[in-house]
Image (cartoon, rainbow, N blue to C red; front, side, top):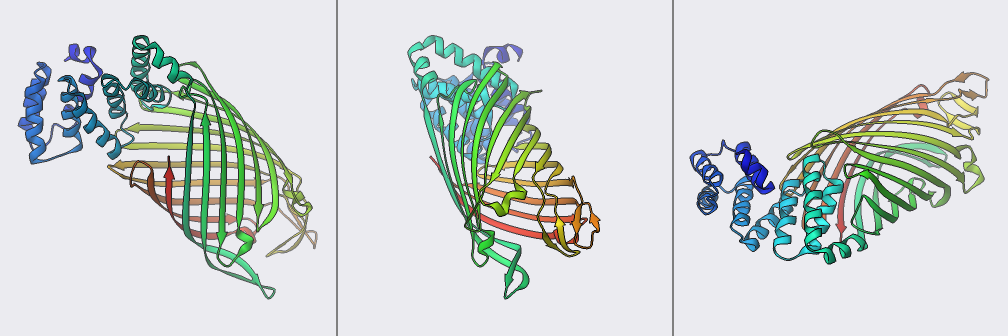
Amino acid sequence: MMKIIKQSILAIAVCCAANSYGADTNQQLTLSAQAAFAKQNYAKALEHYQTIHKQAASYENSYAMAVCYFKLKQWSKAHAIFVNLAATNPEDEWVEINLALTLAKMGRIEESLQRLLALASLADSEYVATLAYSNYKKISAQYPEDSSQQASQASTILSASLGVGIDSNVVSFVDEVTRYGNDTFIELSASTAWYSSADFTNNFVLDANFYSSKYTSTADYNVDVLSLGGRKNFAINEMNMFNAGLRLDQVAIGGEAYMRSANLELGGKWKLQPGAALRYGLRYQTASELDEIYQPYAGNSLRLKLDWAKRDGPHRWQMKYQWGNENKNDGGGAETDAGFTTFSSYSATRHLWAASWDYTHKQWNIKPFIELRKSQYKDPHIFSDDTQTLRIDDKKVVGLELNRTLSEHWDINVDLRSSNNNSAIESYSYNQNIITFTLGWQN
């Protein structure tokens, strides 16, 4: 078996598949197919897998059939199955690398190199990333003209989404009376990104993003955000990625200009054991008000973000920690349950802990998650009777995202989330439930 592993990454793939799913109802045929493959009798192995496929078709059996077709040099048949598997489970990096190698065998060198470069840069499995980069160099040496063209080829990605939702915690003021209730909203987002090349170890990225949400009855909750950014990706080696970028944002709230900010961002990705990676980022933001009434909210902030993720087959686990330190102008009065404040603090030190689990099955992806946030404001609120209260907030968010891929370009998403904020100043405590249905498109 070790000789087969050393000879071909495709052999690794099929042996892993056979070992992982040997408890099939057609166990004897599976073992016979595995034995035939080990003896390099690929035609006999394929015959067994085809028999199994007729009786109990499965993702794993189709995968094994595709590898057999590849070994028998029936490239088009292998390609057809790999394409179908990639559409069924886009997260399967073994399918991706096998598809890339099949494309090379079919003479589609440019497309093969593009896929291998993406895997070398972005694959969660360190082993897959290493194999992808090794094969990229090998194919590049065989086809230098295609490699040169691929390395310098620029590309543009466009995406858009339209969503509708319900918000359970909307505060409105009607006839000088505060009212709490539900409201529906519509979300629209659009983005475009230009990549100087497909090589994420050394490229530039420019992007533009627009987001807008409109509430049916409560216009004060309307939000519009325009964001422009640029980023340079680079690497000391193939396995550790770094980036540096600048982003400009402008925000309007309730149809009125609110804030403009500039963000300096530094970050990277450090690959750990196979399938796991640690992403980290540091952001410095300076924000200026677009209307003098928002002057207390302007200022600067620093944010550190650590994100650990691990993928194992259809499962993906993620844990995140985020620390933030804000230095805003503060000041200004506000109406609270304890009375009118003569000074309000908007600068806080914030901590966030989050965890999520993704599971992908064919075109479906499910993701439950939880977030815990703690915010401690730097100065106490001062009320008109000269009493002071330091605001400390503890917030919990639990939710579920459900996504279904409709085609290569379209998908639908349902987002359910429930928030509970417990504040030392009662007016800032709340419970909120939001349901959003979204239709998304990408070229």
